[in-house]
Structures are given as structure tokens and as C-alpha cells.
Length: 241
Image (cartoon, rainbow, N blue to C red; front, side):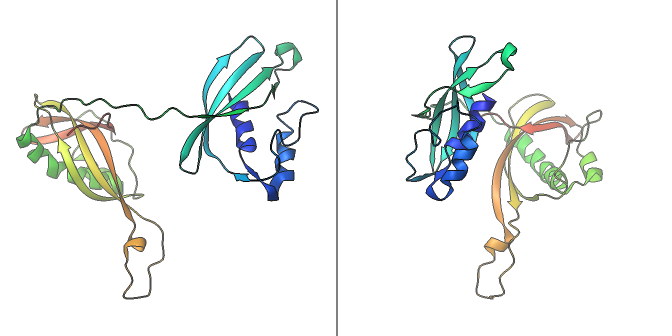
């Protein structure tokens, strides 16, 4: 599958200005005597990105067809690549054994609706200001401040160390339950662009200031006295609320 993905990285990138370079790179994947451009007539242009092995169909002990997923423009496609394996006695080598085929990639799955859990608005109001400061410290890498919000016996999570800036805690979903609950929080991070601020006083500063990125987290929290403490933090699953 790795061999097929490497081949796809060369095969799917063609341009008349780099045809000779492409042919040289393709030679490492093709059998002796194969067409140097492997079916391309030298005209047109194509590029591919996000190339990943997708699936494999084993034909027999020597032959397989590997599907490789890739992105070209705004389309996601598959490339089907027939592969021959020489076997252990012949050096465990691979070669592309026939013409590849472009195929449409499966469309996104239909996501069924799920019932929202019963929310505890009072608990959410208690937790929200504490989580805001927790996420600020999480972004800044302030381990001393983070310690104030971690439950006894839990370990401090790795933090961003200033790579991101906390924007806002957009929402918190707290299900009804006991002292320990699994909650979901949607956080808005301020993402720097590294752009140089404009010297034009009439220009917008938005590009220099950066953008915003919403992300969802799942946290296990525990109430002790009148305060909630974080046990752990990880990526959220399906969106709720």
C-alpha cells in the first residue's frame, strides 16, 4: 500500500513542462519496457495532494489492487493501482503491473440525527467561568494556573504553550448527573497568521490580527464543594447541543 501511494504521488502529477522529470521518477515503479509516461500523452496538467492508502484487494500471493485516496482541486478521488509482489526469495520487491484507474471516491456518509441529552443549565453556569480560565491557561501554557482547575490525582494535560490564544468559550453542554460528569465545550481559538500589519490607517487589521477557529472538546469534570475540577481533556465525539 505504501508503494502504491508513492507511485500515485508521481503518477498523478503531470505537466508538459516537467514531463521528463516525471518519466524519470516513474521508472522506479514500472516494469522494464513500460511506456515512460505510462499512458499520458504529454498534454494537460494535473496535481494531487493528501495522498493516502485507502484499501487493498488481495488477488493471490503475488498480486493485489491497491486503492489510493487523493485530493485534486475540490474533488476527492481514488486511484486503483495493480501491484505485483516478487516474494521473499526474489527480494520482496514490488512493481506496478498494469494501468491504474481513476475512480470516484465514496461520498460522505449520511449522519443520522441523535436526541440531545437533557442539559443541566445551573451546572453549566457554574462551570463556564472556571472553564474559561482553564482554557486560557491551557493555551498560554500556564501550569501554575492550570493546577487550580485540575482534580486531585489527575495529571496536567500537555498544553499549547502560547501557540494559540484563547478567544472565547462559545458553549458548554453539561448533562444531568452526579458529582462527576462528561461535558462538551466548544472553544474559539484566535489563530495568528504571521502577516505584517498594514501601515495604511484605513486598511482592515483583520489579516494581521489572524482568524478564529472553533473546536470541540470533551472533558470529565468533578464537583468538590462549590467548584468543578477537570480530570481530563480530549477531542469531542459527535456534536451535541
